[in-house]
Structures are given as structure tokens and as C-alpha cells.
Length: 312
Figure 1: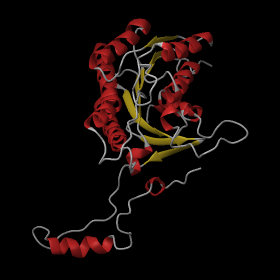
Figure 2: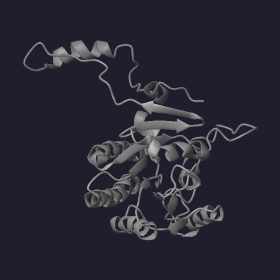
Figure 3: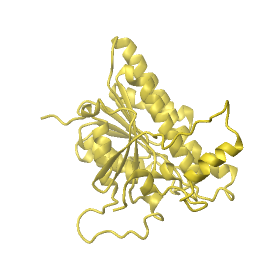
């Protein structure tokens, strides 16, 4: 039986370390030829000199295991370099079938302390980076569809975060970018469905360079794979990239440590209708204040409450 991704070509951004590396290795294991993209800066805040090393090492690891891979060290947040990344995949493998957007940085700060640059840098790498590669991949699939006179094969897997679902006090830039990625994903899913392309987003929970502080107090178990290892996330990405997931489109999935949760789109919790032509302040006060009466002042929704999940 042939591997499920045999004959398909993929791009994985931010694939030199952590989640991206695990995802690139999994796509290759499932038969895909992979362009391993990583800008290679050593700092998780996007600091330091760009370096080809991380991308080259992962590409070499794939080739050593008998797969096809090449490294690309461009900055996906740069429009021209994102174009070059997609063109490289097409030139090397004849087409592009799978795009996994994973590249990101952190510049954490409370909203009242965050600088303009700290905001812009995170939005640029996460949200603009996702848009840039999606733009050029989508154009490639649209042109292929026109030439073929029908649907083609295309899969996009974007990386959001639970920080978007319930907020993250010290990460307003990151939470906003990850929320934007969900909006980009659902919009892209609607726009590209007629061409045979699906777009989905994942919220991974994994122990990586970017989350070393978040999970510092959660110790690894003494036996087996760390429940927060990136390798728990990679199989879902492989599945979403496969032909088996052709009916999965515009979805948001939380994944970690042997668990996958499909997140519903927001639902109306309560509705209040004015008895007049429009609401007055007094009427809104009479309706909404009692609705929130049992919630302590300033309390917001916890991630587990939003997701209906408990941390493992």
C-alpha cells in the first residue's frame, strides 16, 4: 500500500525546530517531498542573524531517511521571499500540493507596556507570514485548476493557538495574530473550496522553544513520549494534508498529547430584543446586568471553559 502523501509536494514554514520540524518529518514519512523553510534566527523573539543551519539539518535528516527534501531560508513575512518559496517548490517538484504555515516569533509584553515594534513584529511574522504564503499557493492552485478545467489537489494547514480562544494576558500581539489566522483560514477555505483546496487551522499545545516558559512547571513523565512533545501534533497535520481529509475544511482543531478536539464556531449564548425602536441605556442595564450578575467583576472566560476541556 502506497504512503498517503506519495507523489505530493509540501512546504512547511518554521520547520527548522520544534513543531515545524516534527511536521516536516511526518509529511516526509507519509511520502511527501518537502521544502523545509526556516529563516534560522536563534532568538525566539526573531533576534539574531539568519542562518541556513536549522532548515538544512532537517532537510538532510529527511533525505537520510530516504525522502525528498530541500531547504529554503527565506523570510515568509517578506512578500517577495514568500513568492520565491512557492516558486522553489514548484520548480523543484513540478507543483505544490500542501502548505503548512508554522513560522512565528514571540515578543511578550502586557498591553500597557508593549511597544509598537513588539506589536508589529509578531503580527508581521505570524499573520502576514501566513497570508503571504497562502496568497502565492492559492494563485498556483487557481491557475492549475483553470488549466485542468476542474478541481486540483491542495491542502493548507495553518497554526493558531489557544491564546486566541481565551486570551493571553502577556501576549496581546500573539493572541491577536492567532485570531487573525483563524479568520484568514475560514476565508481561504470558502474562497478555494471550488478549486479542490481545503484550509484548516490547528491550536497545538507542545513543548517547544517558543513555549519553554509556559510549560516549565509541567514535567515530563518518566516513561514514554512527553505528553507535550511536538510529535503528538504532527500526525494531525499529516492527516489534514492527506486525501482522507477532503471533507475537512474551514475547521479549527486543538491538539496535544493524544487528544484532538474539534472546536465549534461561536454560538449565540443569549439574545435580548428591545421593546422599543432601539435600546436605551436603562433597558440594556435591566437586561444585561442581571445576565452577568453571577460573574465576579473583571472575571473572563478560562481556556478550559471556552473549550470544554481540562488540561491533562
